Length: 161
Image (tube, rainbow, N blue to C red; front, side):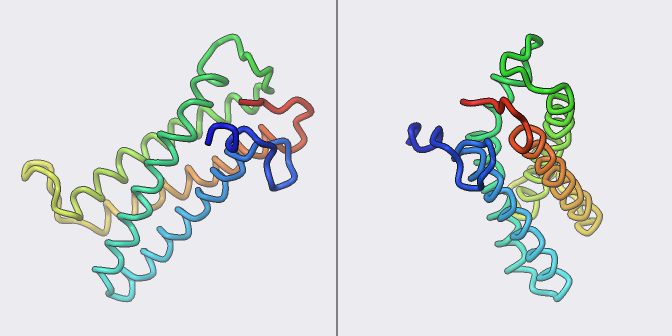
């Protein structure tokens, strides 16, 4: 599996297979979340819950499996071992902050919606909480697209991992 992840990407940029797959899977998460929003607006709350729960779980796997290690290896060190442009480092750090907030808040809302939260952490104003979670996820996805572009499009020396 590791060999596959490190193969050249399939989108025609300087990215490897893992980065290209992360980009597409992140788009899938955004699509699932958006379909879930449409379902909620139309009153299909059970289907909405399934779409949102699936998207939140897929996003958690993506972050923990394919995003944390590149961040640790290329962005967290002060030495910038990959020689990334400062714009790529800054964009990635902003993405990490917004993405972390989206992940934690989104999982909190998902756990609450599935009645898996202790009573003292429960809330009743679902609309407000879900709108904030959706906005955070979409913002993190948009910034993530900029991360991909700054790392792999037009970068003469893209990082390799």
